[in-house]
Image 1 (cartoon, rainbow, N blue to C red):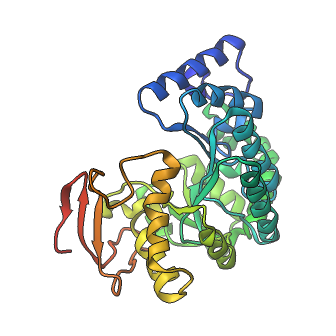
Image 2: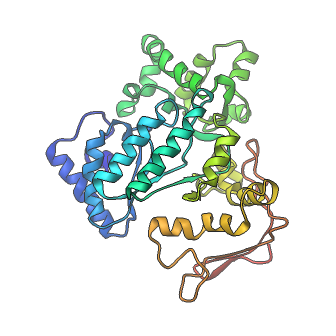
Image 3: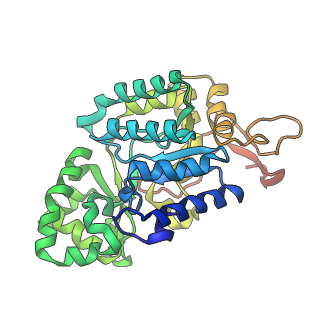
Length: 360
């Protein structure tokens, strides 16, 4: 909405622009939208103030729905970002969904305790707060988000990277964010590179730089100047991931997209493996919860969160979204190196009552 109204820039909206944003939110809700979403670590969402988001969220809240957010920070600023998300929910009246809830970077992992406390305090206050998570300890994003926000305004990152002075100016911020995640060897090339550089996919940035005898910041900035580059960041702990997925108000969600297997699943196995992996790892291997609870996290819980009253349960007169799987053999096959691999164990699949998969 923000970009449609006044483009990819960092200024505040005028009063007229803000009113137009609110009208667009109302129009979208009338057309069937389920709420308002934000990506506050990304351009242009990162330029939006808390107050601006609250005003647009209030307009959406006239129709009900949720505020689903990729928070402003998921590393050292995660607690302040969570406070902001809860405030937006409280003041707008929209239920809150903290999407792919996590705490990134070894120096920050200890903050999960306080983050969970904040969510549960908000729930006790009477706010509707949920989260979702995928069963992996690595995230996937464009490397451009590691550069300072001023450099991204109006799509001028490449222009800044071409200027040696500007590139040098950006370095401390970029390297600081990399260090928060766990260093250059915690970041793997996941895609988005030119055909000539496909051999880089699956390799860690630190390792590539060492092999080539180059500076990792200069290497990745040169890659960014080509076609941009997507990275996979191994910045989360397994223990924290397990705790988050075990929360009764946490749904399973892939944070992935719909990809052809031949296209590499966007560089992350979550697009092909999330749901079978969650069953295999948390139910079959760790025995952290019964199968019924995991199924709830994948079906009725997300349906309830999003207000889908005719989906998410096997009942008469409900939409027939049905998966039949072998609980003994279901497992994911997708890996970080080969993400576009189908899982095994799914026998039948019906979507809207139409059979999509039959006999595996």
